[in-house]
Length: 353
Image 1 (cartoon, helix red, strand yellow):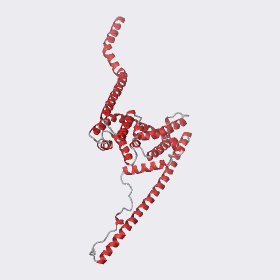
Image 2 (cartoon, rainbow, N blue to C red; image 1 turned 120 degrees about the horizontal axis):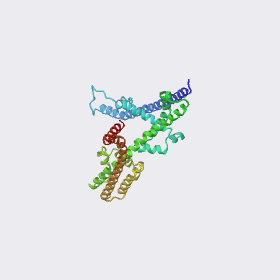
Image 3 (cartoon, one colour; image 1 turned 180 degrees about the horizontal axis):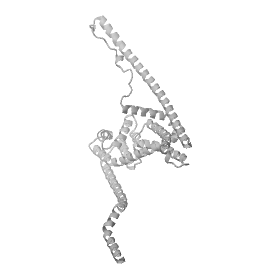
Image 4 (tube, rainbow, N blue to C red; image 1 turned 45 degrees about the vertical axis):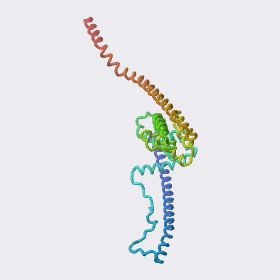
């Protein structure tokens, strides 16, 4: 057996061992959760039985005293019998996938604070995860394990598929490149999603400013304006509505307006969004009329957007010039210079005769 085959087999066995270890860890976590759930249900049944016991004793005393007629033909069902004894397993495929994703994320959370986890999920990666809209620790754990799994699974798969096309002597370099590609693949996916969300934020900013100006103009407070935007304009502002909803939940949980909007102002590297956040904090703290500043800010955002679109059109024109040279110029030369070239060739042929 060749060396590259042995190396690929060793990597495959290593990946299999890691998957088995993860499976054992997940089984232990599932058993611990099942035990905690059974204990919680037992405590609930006991509390319900204890609450139902005084009521049953009162009814017996009332029947003995003759204050209430005895109930015949009916059997009283205890309150504990109405409680579910266990939560059944998820039946749909989406629920099972979501459950396994949560378990996968919980398993990765344990490695986040280790030196290996800090190197795999650096501060830049955490920022990308926040820009993608994943704010819980399970998302960072899922990203950590996904990088490890891709880094260990892609090299043997690439060696098995394309090892015959790799020249001799380059198999180790090919496996190393596959390892690096697998390790960086989740980050590339995160970076693409984060870039799409940043562009969406830049496009949604003028609409957000106009909505704030209109809602403030009709007399709503800042909290009411944000709640209306989150509830009624989610289809127009999908990214900003999700971020504002998270900020509203933090504000309702007891944080100040500045603390709840801090993530929105710092996550997307957008100076206009930072200005809007500072304006909302100022309005919440000091009050005042903000219709005219918002109108001027909205006009400036639209002018900036027009300038950005003009720049894109200029870049597109330059790119289309190359396309036109490659595609249209040969046809144009054939149509315009073709008859002249044919006439010259016929004249030369006549002279040679």
